[in-house]
Length: 96
Image (cartoon, rainbow, N blue to C red; front, top):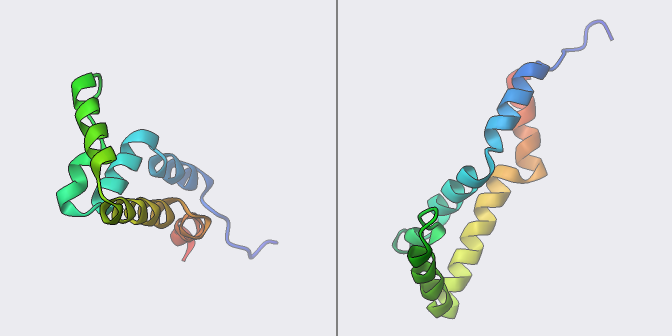
């Protein structure tokens, strides 16, 4: 026990909180993965009902190929940032 490396708890908790700055981080992560021509669909202006309506209509009008591309992009974003494997890798990074 005496020679074991101790995890820097405060540093890990801080990094964890920074990694999970929920809404904003999710939107940015998904937008980065979306095909460039569809990135504007990743979010809408807060409090702007008209913007939300326009984006929802555009999303609903997408063809199968574009919907599949968005679905795959969102999955990549989530797996890359919030899968247990990626979280574990970030947690042990400070002690490598």
